[in-house]
Image 1: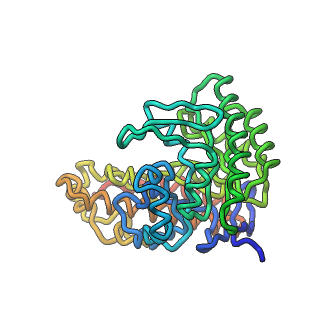
Image 2 (image 1 turned 180 degrees about the vertical axis):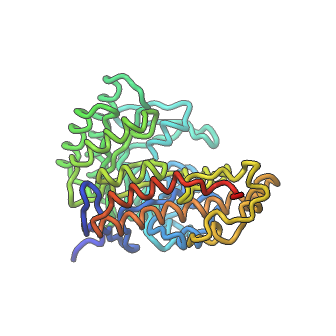
Image 3 (image 1 turned 60 degrees about the vertical axis):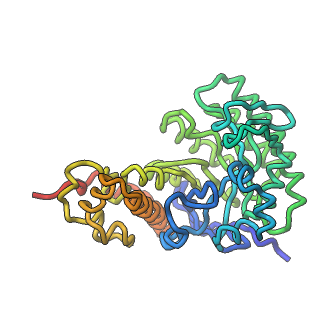
Length: 378
């Protein structure tokens, strides 16, 4: 009996790819944007709105869930899908990035990393084996290996050290993953900072270990967009063509289009909801800061032709008012607008790739962002 997890490549157009990932909880159309539900919730947005936006999968964070309410408690309550009421696929990250970014006191050794919880200061140990075990308890469809992410710029020796350690941890994660029920997937993470030779070494070693999919980690952590896209463009072809490629933690709509052109299949990022909570809407006219004063008397919606009710049914003046009044609904509505836009952007990319016209789609989309659609006429 075949495992439920698989990847089917449907079409390519230059470097861009469209396909479908099969998981125990349903299919994921690629290229895919995965909304970030850090603690089992997309911040400020109901699951129904996330699903209505077109999302096939969401990401949850192992670090936060291990600390509260704990992976064991989630497992006792039926697993993450049941606990949060999300029936579609879930991917969990290993928690390593949050350890590096949130913990003021941490110690990295060959065994793993020990750190103080940002909640209560308790000392916690996270090993490759424990990271996989917790993701198994959560019941995610796709788990990630534990790795060490280094912020850029960094010394070459430090980048190489973290990459080699991440490879040794990858081997241990793969061994631990054998204890999980069949049908789930484990992805390896390519590290190496902005050094292409280290990236090649990492990708080659991970292929030899063997994973269900491969991620590019350690990007969007301080380097320029030019450097990031160069690393993506050079690294993606190093990965197997018949397995998913995931660019972690990226990014803006422009980042997504450029990374799709370079062969990336999966994305996650907090930008749609974080920027929405701060008054920035992503639209086909470009980014619109609804808090700007000129929206106060504008009766137009953000986009009268959008499939998103929040973008189509509320005036810019009303959305502006919500932010001026400090109403939480404003952030929720713009978060929904942004989630819809990200899903629409990649749905358009999938169709364009299948039709062999992704280059035109990318150019037309970028041209649309330059439209003067964010100011009242007259």
